[in-house]
Each structure stands twice: as C-alpha cells, then as structure tokens.
Length: 135
Image (cartoon, rainbow, N blue to C red; front, side):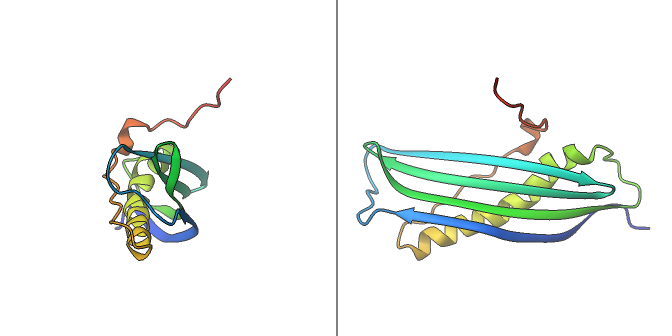
C-alpha cells in the first residue's frame, strides 16, 4: 500500500525578468534573494505557491531582476507520518518546488546573456510556521 504524498503537478505561473543594457559584473554588486511561500489545504490536498525573486544592484541601480512563481499540487496518499498538511506544504512542498524555480532563474539569466545566476539551496525547515502579518 502506498503512503505519503503524491506530486500531482508543478506548474510555472509567472516569470518576470528585466535587466539594464550594460550590467556590471564586478565590483560592489549587491544581491537580494526573497522567497515567499503560500499554502492552501483542502481535505488531503495541499497547494503550495512559491515565489522567488532575485535583484542585483550596483551603486543603488537595479541591474537585474528576476521573479519566478510556481505552484505545486500534492495529495496525501494512505497513512503518512506527517499529519500537519500546512507544515508539509511550508517545508516539504516548498523544498520540492524550489529546484524547479532555481532552474528557471539560472536558464533565464543565461538566455539573457548574463553569467549563470545560481541560487544556493535553502533549508525550509527553518521557517515551518506561516509568516505573521506585521502590525
């Protein structure tokens, strides 16, 4: 008998890319990486939306910006040791989707004539709780 989670689908929703004509590749380059994850749970299904943005600046000028959003759909099958489906989405689901997003970012940068932008792996277990709104 099968148990655990099944990946039903992982789809690309959006890619937003921009760059300046003359991107600076050396010097005081600043890189900013943001990751945002949303989870929706219904019965035994978990839908995880993950958005990753990379912004490279030089002397306060945005040189390169890439934003990628993907959605993964997962179904709990049989008896799983993981009972908290929201936590599954924030940790496991996000970790499953992340390499696909990394690949889109790397390929987009190469196709744009830039050096490959390679995002390092991320440990999603460090942020299993949903983000709380700022007050």
